[in-house]
Image 1 (cartoon, rainbow, N blue to C red):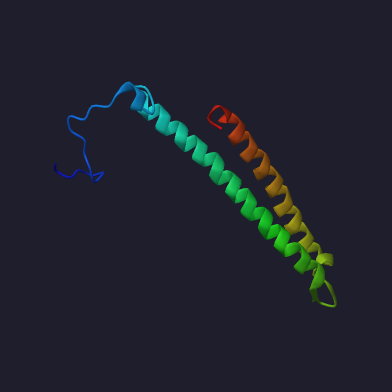
Image 2: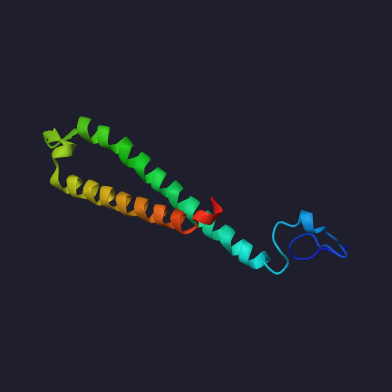
Length: 106
């Protein structure tokens, strides 16, 4: 059996109807659906990482001091944290939307 780009090749293989994952001719559609599901999962993971970062930063910002006052009182830092919190909420909603759009697969 000669190797091809994928590393293996099937020649003259017969599979019974009960052994098929999808109907013949539906493989590409099923693969694309799998990619859509993966996108929703990756989005959810990114939201989790962003939330963990914000949850880690907040207690530190409340404890640390710079220029004679707590970091939490620095207006520029407050703006940045507000931007992160806003982005987190938007990403969270978009991830839910992506999952909802693929709900037939969950």
